[in-house]
Image (cartoon, rainbow, N blue to C red; front, side):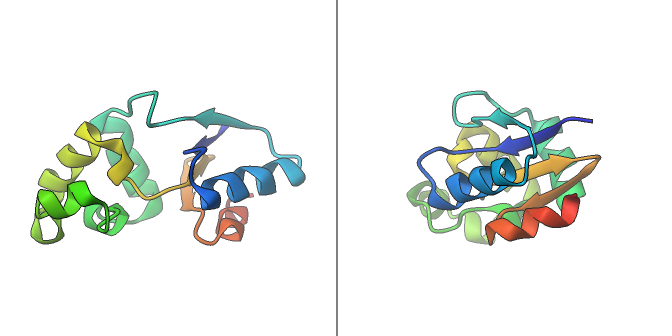
Length: 113
């Protein structure tokens, strides 16, 4: 099975996580989710693999989250907002063998291997 990293090259944690995978010899398909749209089904699947709600994966400090008052929104509303504005998705996410981990800290993704 392939390994994927949902990556934002402008994010230091995302860059650190990708570098860590490379240092460990783990080849990962890089999904630049700000350029390659993520479907609602993909995001819902990854949320299940992470064991998180959409609210827990929300970058609540982003201006868009505050403007849309997503801090008090239900998961369906947050999920729709994340699809419309992918930078609201916390990053990086590594997916491997039907499981996923959030790279905060980057070493947390190593539990997948």
